[in-house]
Length: 389
Image 1 (cartoon, rainbow, N blue to C red):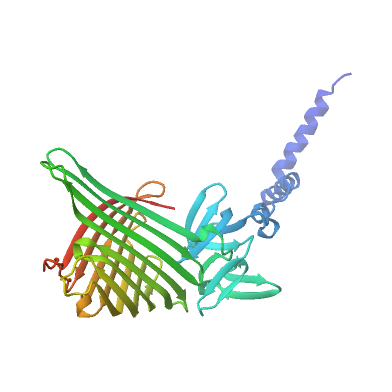
Image 2 (cartoon, helix red, strand yellow; image 1 turned 180 degrees about the vertical axis):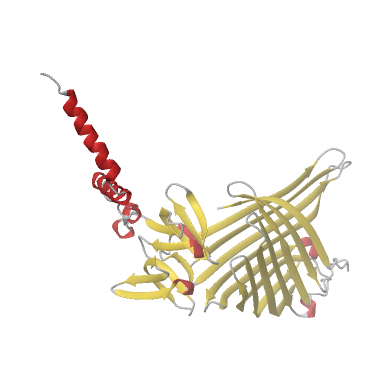
């Protein structure tokens, strides 16, 4: 087969002439049309298509952030404008409530709103509106009116939290000394109530180098428990307020106080909270030693005033203070003060370093069987290692 070179050259010359005389805008338009015909049209809703629709998956709770990040796992709780979420892959995470744009529960949740009502149901948060559904009834609330969320299952372990702390000082050599302070706090919180139980034990002893005798220098125990019912976003009723106290160096074998109180949230914000409580109680004190003509048991009515203060200095450091005063009969001590304050410093994982100052003061301590009157004030500063779970 022969190739006509002159004919091929003529065709190429004609094409070059057409390119030269064709207007540039028309050429660009034709080129764009050719490219468009070769490349498939872009999918405008590609991002939405790639997002797993919340309605399609019922095995997990789902949480969406304002950055369009989507997490699956379990809703633990929402309180103080923070939500705790147990991610399937990332474990327990805490987010600011304002950063959450979507939420869907696989099971029933208990939701408290700003008017004080508590509603149980399946929840969906979308477009800053929370929908709560149960038995065909649907309730909707603006996101800004949601105060707290907790599991509606009464046996769920995820509504419990706990902290344990241990501080110790052991010395040996010319002088042998052993000091320890142990504390434990457990709390159960739902959207409508809060239960707390707290224990603090303090023990100190020295060993006499000559006799080998062990001499106690401190031995006190404090156990408190309370149950609060939230009436609305500001007021709560303390239906149970119990305290057990023992300190042989204060000449107190045991002191039991039981009562009720009314509480008010002065401030209840994300990084700063301040509560006050007041209420009547009944107290029974058994002294360790008394004079022969005195009774070991003292009973008294009590007016209890208290305040708790909590501020988040930064993400790693919290400052806390808990003060209480009991106004009792003069024979029972007249004014009994207790202050616990300090800082908690987050370390790694769930461990923390606690620096705590304890101050106890009894205005009129009761004398013992020798006529000796204990000191009014007891102070101790404790450095301890804590674990939260």
